[in-house]
Amino acid sequence: MIWATLVLILISGYVAAKFFSLTNKRGRLKFLGLTVASGIFTIMQFSVLLDHLMTDPSVTAAAEFIVEWGHVTSLAFVLSSLAIFIRESKPVFAQFPMIYTAFPLLIILSYLLVQDTYAIKTWLLVIYQGGAITIALLMYSVYTYRRTEYALILGGVIVFLISYILFWSISEIQDSYQWVWKLLVGLAMVISILGYEQTEKEVVTNTA
Image (cartoon, rainbow, N blue to C red):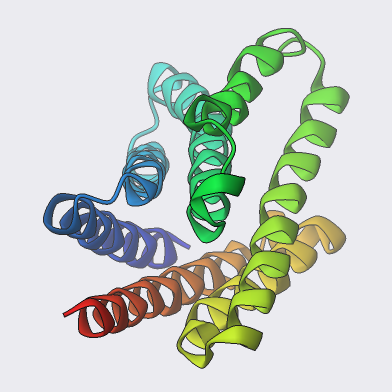
């Protein structure tokens, strides 16, 4: 299982660097949230790796804290980025105010209210993850119908969906077979970033 965590660290670090490059070179605010989310995810997996390598209870407690709050924070930034993508896909006259794209970050505050209730916390994570995947699936399905270059991103979202279903429906995958969901998430991240790079190249070509 350690090898799967290490692979996921390398993949998420690579994806974070790629998103940072897209944010920096294109000046695209919509990639900023994905950059932050993938960076946080990398830190989460690194803390998990340290927990596996060390037997100190304080390290375990710190890793659990980082994973829990990193999970919520990264989901909030992903949802915020998706809101920006949706806003930019609309004509200028139909775009909602940019401030609205920050509303998903309130998820972090809402999680504070239930942090001591395990069952509610779990359900919230299921809802947050499912919501992010559903929004991305619907959005990129429409985009792909209009322009085929979005198909790769849609493929990444579908792999995320498969990982989500397996993780929450088969308890063994959360424990004994964690490598399954980790490899699927890693694959989904690689497919997605390749798709984003491809679509950005198309945007540059069409605007040149």
